[in-house]
Amino acid sequence: MELHHIRRGHGQPLLLIHGIGGSWRSWNPILDALAARREVIALDLPGHGQSPALPGENSFYSLTDAVEAWLRAEGLTGVACVGSSMGARMVLELARRGAVGATVALDPGGFWQGWQVPAFYYSVAGSVRLLRAAEPLLPALTGNALTRTLLLAQFSARPWRLPAQVALTELRSFVHTPVFDELLRHLAYGPRQEGAPRGSLRAPLVIGWGRQDRVCFPSQARRATAAFPDAALYWFDRCGHFPHWDQPAETVALILAATKPLAVDAAVAPGTSAAQ
Image 1: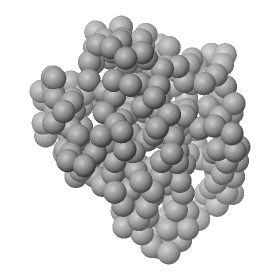
Image 2 (image 1 turned 90 degrees about the vertical axis):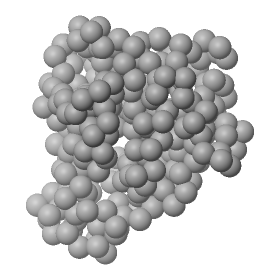
Image 3 (image 1 turned 180 degrees about the horizontal axis):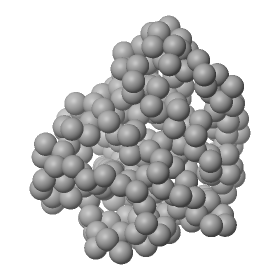
Image 4 (image 1 turned 90 degrees about the horizontal axis):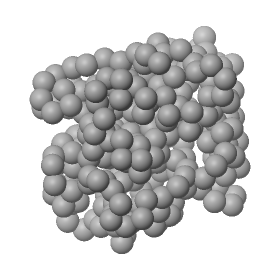
C-alpha cells in the first residue's frame, strides 16, 4: 500500500509517525528544525491525511503492519524513527519487531490499566464529538487564547502559547479522519502492547514523557519501561501529551541525540533515567 508522505532536508533519514487523527502536518512545530540536520520523512498513516484507509479493519496492528510493509517497499527497513502518541506505540512495536533503527517514542499509548482505559476512551471520544459539532467555529475558537486553552487543555500543558494555526490544523485533522472512531475503540479495548525482553532490541530506544500528560498519564511510563527494559526514559517538564508542541526545542535536541548511532546515553539529560 502506498502511504502519502513528504521528504525534507538532507542527511541521515528520520521517519516521523503521527498519532491518531493527525497527519504529517502534526510535526510542523519541529519539522524545519529536524530537516536542517536530517532527511525527514513524515507520513500520513492509513485513513489519515492523504493516505486512504485500509480495506477491512483499521486497527492499531493493521496500521502497523501496513507501515512495516511500506518500509520494506521503500527500502527503509532499519530507519531511525520518532512517533507521537499512537505513533509512539507504533514505533515501539516496530522496534520490537526489528523493523526500525534508533527509536524515540513520545508519550506512547497502550500502557493504561483499569479506570485509565475508559478515561482515555471516553475523554478523547467526547472531545472529538465536540470538535465535529463546532467545526465551523474552529478558526475563531483556535484564534482566541482562552478558547484555544479550553479546547486543548487535555493535550497541552500550555495551550495558550500554541500558534493558532498549529491548533487549527490538528483539530481539523481530528474531525476529518474517517477511521478515528474505529481506531480509538481498538486502541482502548483491543490487544495490549507486547514488550521486548531485555537485550532483544537491535538499536537504542528512548521513551519521552510529559510530566503533565492528561491523555497517557505519567504513571504509565513505569509500565512502558517495564515492558521495554532496554529503553531510557526522558521526562519533559512543563509538558503535556505532545512534547513537540510544549517543548519543541528540547524535543528536537532529544531526537537528534537519540537517533545518532550508539547515542542513547547522550539523549538522557542529567537527572533523568529509566528508574524515575
